[in-house]
Length: 217
Ligand code: ADP
Ligand code: NI
Image (tube, rainbow, N blue to C red; front, top):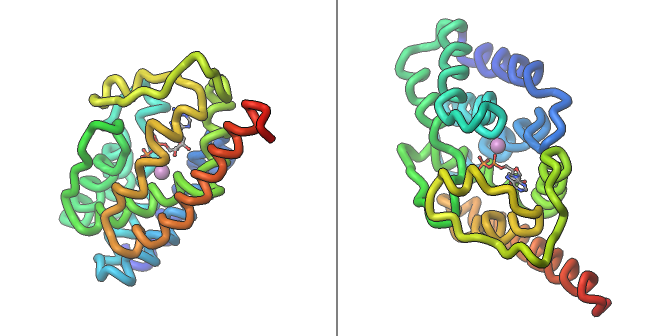
């Protein structure tokens, strides 16, 4: 399939698979990550084809919805790309990214197999912070039956992916366990810049939440 046709067909495929998902991992999340990844790749000189395909496929089969299986995303992405007759090297480069983009806990180091992986990871993480990030986090909490906040349950520092995966803590804790850490874990200068404002907005949100909870406001 010609290069441009492959991106278009992949977007259509992913849209059909993910439309209407309600935990914050829906098609519109993928769409925003795709567009953000293009923006970062332009400024960073990443390989646009690899970036676009990996951004589109990055959440195609997330471990959270497949019993913690972290291999399945790359496998589903590979099946799709092979069915489109995509070039083998391209398939490998894209699937390496799809398999490695996730946040695995505050104390677990990210791996960066390529510039393109860093770009897609940044785009995904930018969508986890700011106003949209807050919205997605409460959507995820609701979809997964989590308490919004429970002052008796303190945030945890997860130093292994296993422990992070098993966590079922209240939604506000997720800000301390992941979201407020992301600003300092952006890879590209472009994403670091965009993260600043989104981070500040989230800090204000948790501060306001705390003050309302405590009856200060
Ligand atoms: P990544 O994109 O790094 O794999 P996830 O898929 O784990 O990240 O999370 C994507 C989004 O889903 C988070 O940014 C957050 O909005 C929501 N989310 C994931 N885990 C939790 C959680 N334990 N509590 C609340 N929201 C969560
Ligand atoms: Ni994502």
